[in-house]
Length: 249
Image (tube, rainbow, N blue to C red):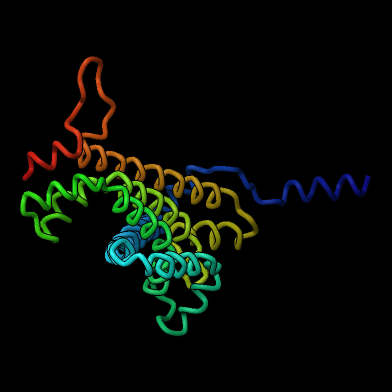
């Protein structure tokens, strides 16, 4: 009887811990919104900087074959470093700031971006390049008018994968107090006696954010590569890459 009474008291005194609570979201929206904005900002900035660094590296690896191995190997080596260790290593140099998280995310994005950018450039048909050179295209014009358009499917695929991966990795930035939605999951959830609403909300928000980013990039890819769309019955939906390049010329 005594044991049963004790269990009843515990059940009454225990704080409710539902899987989801809309009231918690409403009550904490002023805290959630800045962290959501930070999450988006870190993702966008990191992927953009990563792309700016990755493209020249991919060009270098494509044009100097003996550098392909070192460039890919170095980016892969960085990716093997655990994210917690990476942020902890960078913190003494860049402080407990967004810069620490952004630097780590940029480095992690390189392994995906460099490989996809390089694959796209290497897949450009040699006959298309030779035809453009025969028309008097210089290196810069050749790259802008022929090679980049033909490499766009692989480039966009790399950006999509890197973006989704970065959305997930931002949460680890909580180790330096700059984790975006990760702050909600860890600080408001796991550190608050495993309170479920912030854990579930933060996790779902990350998933939704990744899906939205992926679909936006997929839409951008469709706009930039009309020749890559599925042909309709009896005709093609758009011109082929080579035809598009010739028209653009």
